[in-house]
Image 1 (cartoon, helix red, strand yellow):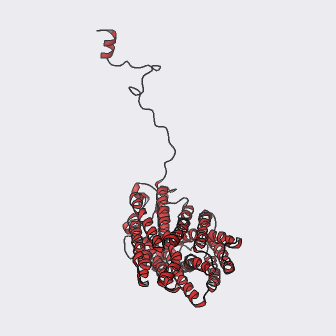
Image 2: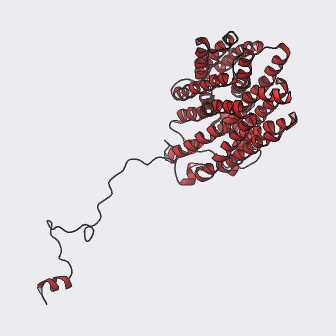
Length: 462
């Protein structure tokens, strides 16, 4: 046997320290190079929620654009159309706390998917309507219930479950998603209505909601524990405080039990009252009636829609900044400042309407846009401070107050327009209401006494 054959038969020699042996043959694998921290799945959840809220925002944009076309085609008055919008907002608010409880029972993914389907069906069915009651059924009931499940209580549930650190900032970003949706949808829908009729807008927002459903089913998860994770920024010691309690959440009447406990406290009524005025002065008045009010002064609908979309641009900035401030400053003082500034701007608005856009109106749009939903992050923070793990459901009821206020003013402003031929009285009244809301915020105490609220809420959810 040759020397080479003998070596081959006896196997490879043991390499010395300096021997060069191919790593793929005999050298053990080198330890993995440490990598940077993986992206926490909470950020995937936040991205999906943002997409859902943007997709659902088209339903908030549409009523203001439909008012004049429906009045022209069917002869329905502003009051009748406003009644459907008012019912939509009312059911939107009433659904929110029950949707939060249903998310505990059936999971965020299922509730969100069903809600989006419901909105899509309601919007699509409006293209066949010929009577005003059909609009009340489709836009008021179906879209109202569906959008209520995708309301701000949805944001509070997601951020409460998935985030401990950066919670205020993420709340601000998700809240701003609705404003971003307005930015995306308003100019497009106004153009569609102008060129192709109002039915094209209803079909468009319905398809957009439908398109988000597969993404929700594929990527949405209920809570970090489903993936063996902790909430973002949490440690093992933080889990009881950061994760929502699902033991009491499986009961269908939990929303009512939580309401019973919260309604016995002064902070709940101060928060619900101030947030009702928030809804009245945003979605109810400006969101629904700004475009027809501008039309009363000769402004083209697409131009007015562009201005309202510009509100959405600055709303994104203002709400994210408000979330950042909420992590650092006293939420009560923030709310007081926000409401006072909003009231001042609304008192000046009637004098700013004109046929064309001028610098004073642009200043109002910027100023009002920064404040539009900047109230949401500090309101959610105060709900968490006072109501702990029940905060998403309590905020759902507070948001219900928001939508009741929006519904009352959406209908009331339409009736004011029908009776007086002008919206001026509505703008002035809204300015006064904002002063009341600021007072409610500043009347909240700095900290809940340990012997008061937690005992009541715990009893209510037992």
